[in-house]
Image (cartoon, rainbow, N blue to C red; front, side, top):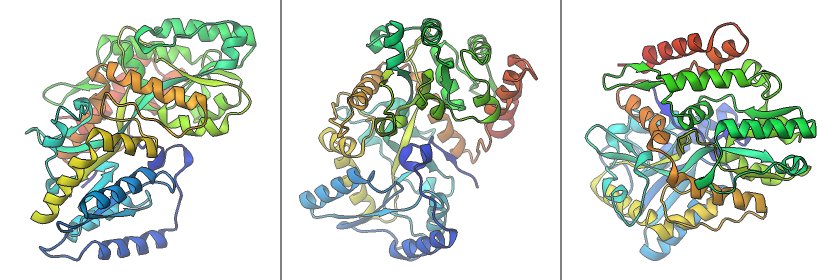
Length: 441
């Protein structure tokens, strides 16, 4: 069986933060963890006073989880044992635990897996509680409407600029997501800054299907989208947007090397010789520390005409139905966790973008640019069109059908188009074929 992962947040291995561990250590840790979580048999799992909670995060970014389980024990007397597992091997550990009837009671997972998805607790009461204001676009549901997972947080694509270069060129930028620029306006502005400041490129753009989807959504397309029968296709707006994107890769506005040979767009931007960078919120903490030679800023994402992004789960919070007492206790813990005051405290301590609207997290960043960036993302997400959560939901549906997009052909096929080896339309034709072969029907 295969699993489909959500897009990794920085704590699940994005941006080079993930720490690699020797395979022997992973295996040893896995064996210890599984034995600690109960043996095989009908009595697996915790009980009404003791739960096991698996997470996977780098040291330091588990602060929110540590804070909340400590507070929960103080308030209720229930001991939620937090187990932080290295990302490498986390999915196999979950599969092994399912097969040994030794799943944790609660977990944040990077993917749903058919091997254990039938063991999940229905979180509908939490998700549908209006006081929580959880964005329904980003829930993982099955065909019956059962809520299988609620995001621990969300990640979104976004635009970064070299503020120093914009100010040097005297070019204005929008400050409010309600009054943002179009892609045409943005490219015109970035080109003007490049020309006036003699920067090398106007824009670098992650070699990422997610970042491309965000741009296509904003230009009114649906990218590679399935109909009710599961057959994939692309619409006219998508073709127009992708053709526009390919044309931007002219080694002036955008470098061809990112999408054709894997050059690092983040490093290019951080060099100070690039006007803007299309990436996402996970870059903010790193930029707050690493960029010293110029001022940077997050700016509202373009809308042409759609206010959108590609929004994914930073992690998927689930509960497992190991036994009646533990399942009830797990549900109570998650119900408490997603109460707005508790959930806001989690987001503040761990630097999460909340899946709940109406919150105003106070983040611990010293960088004014980082604080402003998180404020902008939190203001923007409620404005995004529902298409922004399509791919996140689609992955859940594929998992429930036992399917996996093991290799998204977007990067390879568009790289060929940028290199002049095929047209943008031919690239899309090949991408659609890849989707239909792997997850269609």
